[in-house]
Length: 116
Image 1: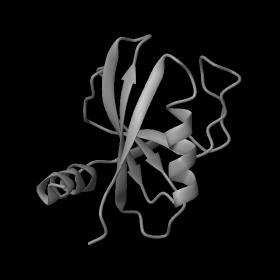
Image 2: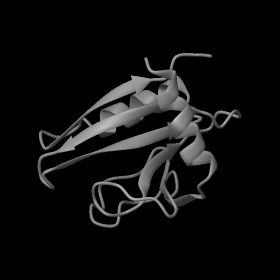
Image 3: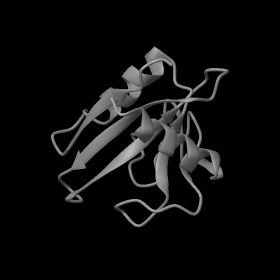
Image 4: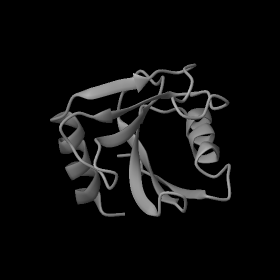
């Protein structure tokens, strides 16, 4: 793994405001059957492939450290993007992984950060 990647990501997140617009337990605005199991939001004043802020999942670990990323391919939107996982327990990482691999239209891989 390239430690400079994680350092750059730490700087990007550290210099950004995290906005949680879909708290744990909330319903997806377009898909009422989808309930968020982990806080979900974005980094304010950043941009991703969809033109919106870079997506983040924020878990319940006391140490709010970037611990993984999800790389996603969405066949419906015909795009790809990353989602940053911050302070997620192993259980939360598994839930996020399964969330992004639940349908035939979206697939993702989880890349864990090695412990320092």
